[in-house]
Each structure stands twice: as structure tokens, then as C-alpha cells.
Amino acid sequence: MEQPQADIDRETRQDVTDLLVRYATAIDQRDWALFRSCFTEDCDADYGDIGHWDGVDALASWMEQVHAPCGHTLHRITNQSVVADPTGVTACSYVDAIVMGPDNRTGTHAIGYYDDELRGGVDGWKISRRTFTMVLVEPVGGPGLYESDDIRAIERLKARYFRTMDSKEWDAMREVLADDIVMDTTASGGNVITGAVDFIAFLREAIGDVVTTHHGNTPEITITSPTTATGVWAMEDMLRWPDGTELHGYGHYDETYEKVDGQWCIKTSTLTRLRMDIAEPK
Image 1: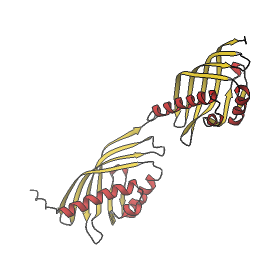
Image 2 (image 1 turned 90 degrees about the horizontal axis):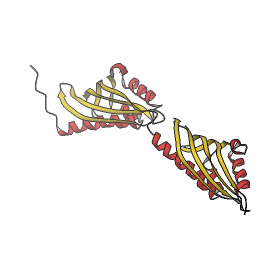
Image 3 (image 1 turned 135 degrees about the vertical axis):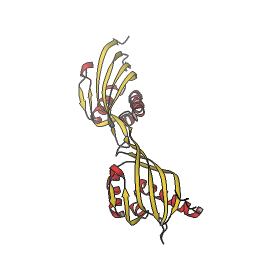
Image 4 (image 1 turned 180 degrees about the vertical axis):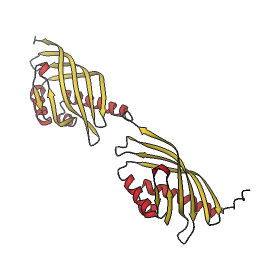
């Protein structure tokens, strides 16, 4: 016959609950001194298939090593049940953890529960024995996690390209280009220009005094990695030279993009014109 569980006073229950929250906080903040303060020196920690450690130094060393390459982590401790036993107290609590990879785009979601035995001392309550039971583990995120945000950012990037070209804001236009951009206009009567500085210099010379209007439509953006993408744009442009000559063109941009320091830029661009209507000065 089971013996009735002894009552736990409110202060003890709160102290144990605070300890469990401190454990989670220590991991998420990578505060390994705080983590060690949650366990007795001779603790026994059985995390099932993950591993089994004797002593707080071995456990803390492993925790520090496994979390060093991680991105954000979030450990939530809930449903704490605290009861007395002959040597101290026992606690059962749920843990819901998210551990993200270095890029914070993919990771692991794990749910389980801790069965803990705790001993009290001059430093308060500490975990002397822990058993972790895994209930669920599943992947988090994937290649398309932030894809829509990146696509919108690239669309805005190309919009700035067109606007700053037409308004002749060369410094602002320079910011949308990779340093080593390759611009290929051979299919529309031009040539290949490598480097953002040379391309901006070319535009200043070619259309600095030309009234231009560029439209980009129906973008087809594909995110190929967290830092690379490709795109195809239908384009239409109107150019009017000072002598009255006009060009009305149609075609496509085939481009690649690169994310540098969190910002997308145009890496390569190939302009192919399908049609050019030229009107001579009247």
C-alpha cells in the first residue's frame, strides 16, 4: 500500500520551482556557473539515449560543448509537482525545448519530462539525481522557413535598382549591387561589365543625361540557400535622349542574388531584349 505523500510548505515548493527555472535560464543564457549551481557535486544525470553523466562537472562540460555551436535555444519548464521524501524532495516537471542551429533557421523541438531528487543544504535545494524521459522530438524549420521574407526583400531590392537608375541616384544604386557584380548586356547590344564601380561609371556615361523609365514585372524568385537566390524579371523601359531619340524596349533580366551581412544584393544580371522600337528625332 502506498504511503501518503508528505505535504510541502509553500516556501519549499517555490524554491524548487525557482531552481528548475534557473536551470532552464542557465542553458539558454549559456551561464554554466549558474547551471552548476543547480546540481550537487556528485549528481547522477540520466538523459536516456542522449547520455548519462556522473557528477556536475561532467554534465556541465557536456552541456557547454553541445550548446556552443547552437543558435537560439528556449527551454520552458512547466507543471512542476513537488513532494517530500525521506531524504529531501522529489519533483516531476515537463520540459518543452527548442534548440536552433547556428543559422537560426532550422533546429530541433523536444518535449519530455524530468524526474528529480533534490537535497537541501546551506546553498538551498539542488538536484542530486535526474532522469529525463523523451516524449517527442521533431525538426524545426527548413529551407522555406523565411523564404517569403527573402523573396519580398529581393523584390524591394530590384525596385530600388529601377528607381535609383531612373532618378540617377548613383550612390543609392551602388548599395543594391555586389562589389563584384557581373552585368551582361551583350544580348541587348551592350557588353559585359564586372564590378559595381565600373558599372555605375558606365551608367553615368551612357544614361546620365537620358530620361529613363524602367518597369520590372512578374518576378520569378527562387531561394537556393540561406544566402543565395535566382530571379527572372520581365522588363519594359523607355529612354529619351536629349536630341529627342527614343527607345521603347521589352525583355528579361536573369539574375542571381547574394545576402551579405543580412542584406540582399544583385550578384549577376543578364539583360536580354526581345524587342526594341526606336524613334528618330522629329
